[in-house]
Image 1: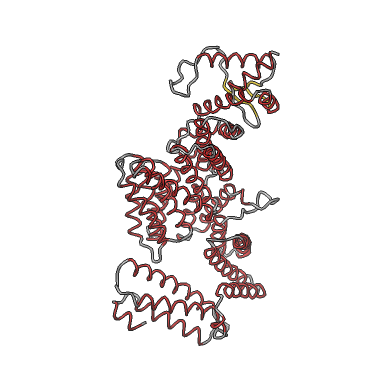
Image 2: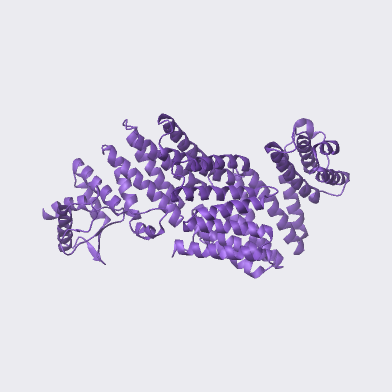
Length: 604
């Protein structure tokens, strides 16, 4: 009888995890008078009862105690749960939620809270899962459980790179919030919490390269926030901040999809909202503005041709605003990328070393972090440009090791631990390793790495949606490098096979209409198709009504990109009149692309 009564009391005062039952013990049987006086703090009576439970459980050997921690086996914790009435269980869950909220100190902007939060992460996730079982919890506690689950998801993604676990926690948060809304609890707090959770879920889905679902989640978050902002007549600063945050995240997503103009519009909207905020001088707003400036700079770097000076200016402004370690490291890494493109290699090296130091300070023992991998990738690119091939190989290899760990969830079922996950970030570093190996004249090793890249890209393209064009170009480039390796190794049959595979792939992507198919009969079918496309782009560019302005810049970018792709086709095409004509056409357009309007029109 004593044991049964003790179990009921313990269930109310201690918190349950799926694998163990873990809690802090007080051996002096005194209440913790140092506890803060907050709505979530416990009374002296509750502390006394917890100490009593601790002592009784120890006396019956129902707990194992080590380093001041008590652990109860999962079977015991289940027995304790099942022995409760519904009313007792509901009350005990609320106590567990309050216990977690009092102990959960995680703040994304404060790395000093991360280590302590990790020690109770599994308990937070477990309490959130148990909260979903009790549909008659009060709205207040459903909301608290949903917020805890959301924060657990943010922590899993930010600190641990555990994206699958983060997604599960965020989806659990949405289930909790929806269960409250289903009972007519559609108040401001629930709507705001759901928008925040959808925002974070969109970010995590982007990390996993699930761009379609990421956009869906972010747009739903934006819709909720905009609707609530309209109802409040734009007078709620926290809602406006949420809108700016989601616009920023949509911009980052469009950068990943290489929709640069759309990305710039989202990011500029976000920046304008943040700068017009009543709290525009606060540290938090400065940090958010710095993040958006960083992403706008990334767009200027990605454009063709890139605006490196503009990107550099934006990054330096970002650096002057942000004080958070992670943000400063990211901006330094991007400044290094710009410096490499400008030829300032020593300065780039300094930026990267500083960024790596900051990341190591931030993540501590967790050196297998995606951001550290990004720095290693840039260090590899810098070493390659300096022709320090062995150093480049080492940096890229370390990057590959980290990305294999981070994206382990993307491995095929039943694969070995040393196999590559099916992820674009993994294929990118494999490609760089293949290029370094080729420069070292290690052709067999280079071909081995490039074949691994080939396999990943092939599998990615099978299930690709929004990023199919990028994958297609990556596959063509991969086949070109494989052909180079095969040629150096004297594998003529392999060279022919790779050329045929590349040609067939390009023919499939061209897809001319039935009327055009009758005209395109030569072996240079894709060259003809690309030349026709460039001719249309050149005509549109020449007929612009103004020689400056947004439309002119956009059309110039499209034409420049098309001419670059045309050059690749010219290089691969067989020697014939079509190849000579395409080359002459390209030279003509290039010679007049920067001329005044009238001369441009006459030439084209």
